[in-house]
Length: 220
Image 1: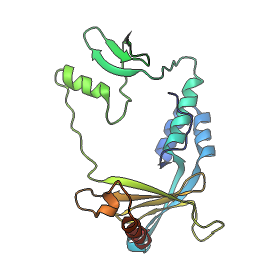
Image 2 (image 1 turned 90 degrees about the vertical axis):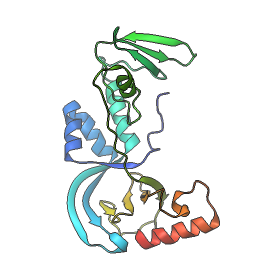
Image 3 (image 1 turned 30 degrees about the vertical axis):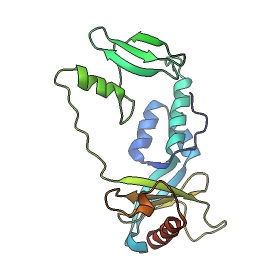
């Protein structure tokens, strides 16, 4: 279904190149992103809770879902673009240029297309279809090598010691920044094969919570 809650993801930064891309679509799209987001002016490198570098930067901090919502609304306002929700791609017949979708009632729908743009993410069904059916088409996927766990905190109301326009890189441990709604986001790097279970586990215990608090205070 069409997304309605555009604030359920994680923060990203639109840098100069990202903002330029939005401007190529429409200046109004870029302006909306800056209006919804918040300025980012510096990166502080803070390994082991000690600042070792301050790097001037330029960007707009925005939630990933907010950026996607702005693009969606721009597409909906373009009479040359048609949107079809809840169509799950099942396969592609490359000889006939037909795509088969499953729709909400369980039936199948076939669409003919001259050109298909595979903008369906890192688990792309289009890419898998190409791998299975297109000669000399191959894919090499490099794993990130780590995972991220996100936490949110309201912080201390009225505090002025930490500038929201500064983002913090915690060495190799994670990243801290403020979201456009004023909530602070803490993303911690996780190595599933070697980190302790208070970082990797899916179930909380009092002991894991305590260790996580100590770890966050130490590094963030």
